[in-house]
Amino acid sequence: MKSKLPTLLLAAVVALALWVYVVTAVSPESEENYYNIPVTFENENVLLDRDLMLVSGSNAVVSVRLYGNRSDLNRLNQTNITVTVDLSGITEPGHYEREYRVTFPSGVTGVSIARRLTASVNIDVARSATKEVPVQLVTQGELQDGLIAGQPQFSAETVAVYGPEDEVEQISIAGIEVNYADLTSTLVGDYAYTLMNENYEPVDVPNVTTDTGEIHLILPVEHFKEIPLEVTLVDGGGAVSANATCKIEPSTIIISGSEEALAKIDRWILGSIDLGMVDAASGYGEELSIDLPNNLTNRSQIFTAEVTVRLSGLTTKTLTLNQDQIQPQNVPDGLSARVFTQHIDVVVRGPAEEVNALTAESIVAMVDLSGMEPGNYDIPLTFTLNGVAQAGVYGRYSVSVGLTAEATGE
Image 1 (cartoon, rainbow, N blue to C red):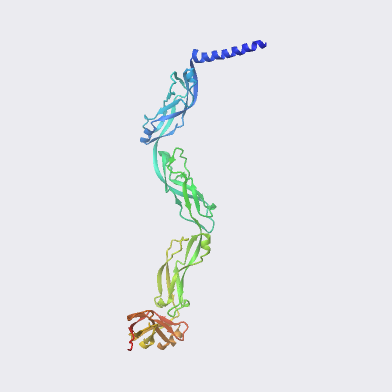
Image 2 (cartoon, rainbow, N blue to C red):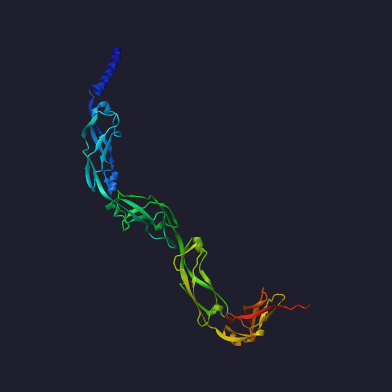
């Protein structure tokens, strides 16, 4: 038995060698199936030039049964068999069944198609279109109380979409969806967008491509509150804040900013008004600017306020001051001052009991000559009223004054 084993092994090897020889040399003609060979499309750029595009069939595969020399067939596989379809003959949109051409790698010459297991390649061609659609924020939910969202900023204002005409026509916007309920601070990041119709509904456009990937979004989210507008009333001309009725329109504005910035402000002062310059009869009226600091935003979008002031409870009287009642003050060394104005009428204003008790002798008028050189000047007057708590001089007054060098003895 042991002596027969080597003989049996040798016989098996010889038989296998004979089979290989027969298959590859003695019987060279054979057939083999090759499945799922990818299709390559030629002249697709011709379609583009005709405003056409391939919408289905671009991933087509075919299967074929090949006939030929076994040694050649053994060299073939799914990756080195080339299947091509020529698109140059297509001039209109529609469904097409196109023949395909099969070619083999260099050196494989004894192979032909025995049967096309896939009879033809089915494709659909559509009219193509391109358009720009705006990028928009599409929001859901409500912001938490005390928060306000600003204008979104996008790294791209529009997106170019390309695809079949019927799909492109469905697209109105590139929407970035944000849930307001989740926001507590400014939103910053790169976000994917969804192609949507005019009703902000996503559209099914599988064959559409775009020129933009994710879009960088900055959505300011700030705290806000309503604050009053005010002015500072400066006592003067016999009028105090108790005599003034001040009206500001609008009386409040809504501002936004960081929580820390808002905590530091509970009102906004538009400016100051000198009551000494407010006429008791006509009052005061002016538009004042609302100039907030850079860390706050005026959400009301009202940038001026109309301020009116009316005075009440005041009496006026005109008193005449003589030249000798006008006192030069701070006359520079080496100079002498002379008041040229002979007399001046001044209006005093204040509570009736104070004004009625005033006389010209109650008023001290002064002219400040600090730092002045020889010459003639019109210089404003300042006043002091003796014996009163509130009353004062209403209006602005000036007098003519001459400064000359003092004579020096020799």
